[in-house]
Picture (spheres, rainbow, N blue to C red):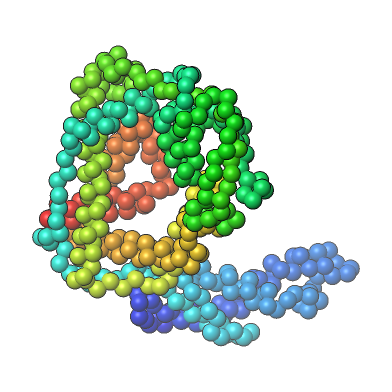
Length: 424
């Protein structure tokens, strides 16, 4: 086997592999012997007929394909291990020459994105330090009380914040539509769960009333309903109001939050929780700006094959999440007011942005000698064990096939920390 390498543009390497006559003949013989096991020749047991009788019954194209397939893994492994060509995506493989005596295969191998990194330290991007006000803490406490409220049937009229139990039947131009009918449906008025204008028209009505609600579907909705006026016939069965619990130490203890047993401790806990959330949000926003600034002074070459693979992975992930939520892609696009071309363009832009950021982080890790070894892995395993209340051994066992992904995740996180700490 002879291999000729040529460096191409955009992180690609061309490798032309010429197999020796002996290698090619041996592969064909192996393929022939395997295929003849399933050939029927009258007068002989399957797989035991003479080769000259079997030969005409075996498709030559199938034999060549099987022979080629048996040679490719060894050739590809040699390219990686001996020629030190590191693939980032699956290679493109074409047959340059194919005869009974000759086989020449061309591999186009796409490597990792390449970068010539510009200034990445001591940049002035505008780092801010978030804070939390007493009003924000009080707002969170009120939300917590509402989440733990009980519902009690009330007399009188529907008010915002009440929960109603009702039957409804929707129609457009007198025709019912899918999803427009329900019985004994519970809805919190003011939750904005239904289309605009629906919940507001429930306010002021009383239990036992039957009435119509008139709405117009938004323009960003399913094709068969968007922009159309609709009528919902309502049969209001019951009205419930929220009874908030009293904010005291007893209530706090019932929340079962670790090391939080008093109202004061709950406020401090919520304040820290808000602060942590803000810090995460500010960090993400800051790093996005920082990546943009670093990119301006850098040269980044991301191969199209890498972009395509990332876009496809994101598309599959998005479709899976939609299906889990009961949506098909077409339905989702109707709701958000996008066509498939716009959706794919968004995925592409996000993919390129992410690939550039990861490429920058990898180069920073390389230049700053950031490495992830056993010590860093053990620390991460310990954190996970504490977070999920598991034994470290069980965490390791659960992640034994994902160690490389975990190492990569830690590496990128440490490079991110370095950039965050060394810029302003």
